[in-house]
Length: 463
Image (cartoon, rainbow, N blue to C red; front, top):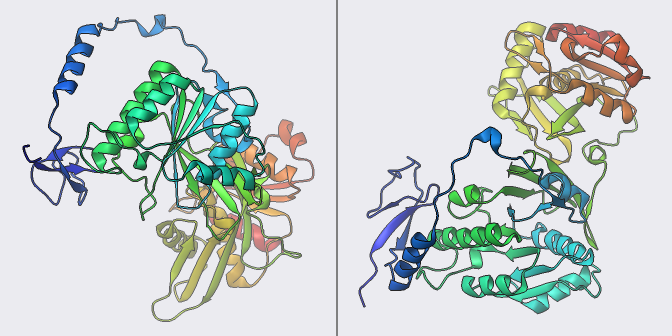
């Protein structure tokens, strides 16, 4: 038997090279080449390829305006927060990839979802490659899923999984996980770049041809990215990330890619003794329960996809040494340094000899610039040692020239704050409601501002 040649495959783009290089010659990524054995083509593969080419028909060229646009039908999973992230539910023939840290609750959430789908009358299949059927049954007992009729298959060989999918014809199938699945046609080990790529490609083709909805569970690396080739995320229709601290009971499911819905939507779950339960009012998680206002705290309204959420921004300013520290948790550290410079230049608030620590409560990550105004007000409040008024919120982007720029969907943010009982708001002037819209904000006093110094003077006048 001829010895397999060694090749090096890029984990990002899937490109190959016969020798190891520090940088991938295809996508120019550094340190992404992984050693593997070159797969020799077999006669079976060649015959199959020739057969497909003979049967394949040329696709008809159509004018875009003549193609009928049909609304995609969705099937709810029984988990409202998961449906929100998916865009309304599972799509027929759709492929979903969900990744997250070990033990964060991926298998728990999916087992609850397929059980709810099975009870609604849909045929489901749960393929487990990391656990035995008995272990899955024990988990279902712990979750209170009594007499669950979900079909379970403990198998990691791709060909057997495809044969079972073809025989059972389930509406929804879960593959837990794609890194454990291997194909006999490849000699590399399960979890290798070639195995993950080929197994995912075969399962995706099965989903598109048969209409079965497939959910793939993916491992993550120590950097928090999905393990395997980057092309894996391009193959599937939806990519979800399971986030959260294992020491906290709250979990976030975030959509990074969704061909059938909005991206950057999040679903909020709480881990209980009976599994994951959706949190209908996530703003309560990200707000500290102070009996009285405290210095260094400012509440803002952020947008996660289409959902406005209230998040408390906390700041602590303390005397530092010759090299003061700038530390932010949940916010961009580089943007914090920029905001401190703008605060000094345009509002006269100097922090060059102070340590500045900023935190977004609840472990949420805020990437939008609409948090700028709340961060600056929290820093100023901590430096002055005076709390902001009770029921106070603020949002808005701050530019280098000191201007306060509008945030997207400002009225929706204000409506969410009004609904939760907040009474004072400092917002960009462009986000201020018109007189005809003020009936939606009864009980709230809204202060529109154009510049950061105007916002600072306004807050001082509210003391």
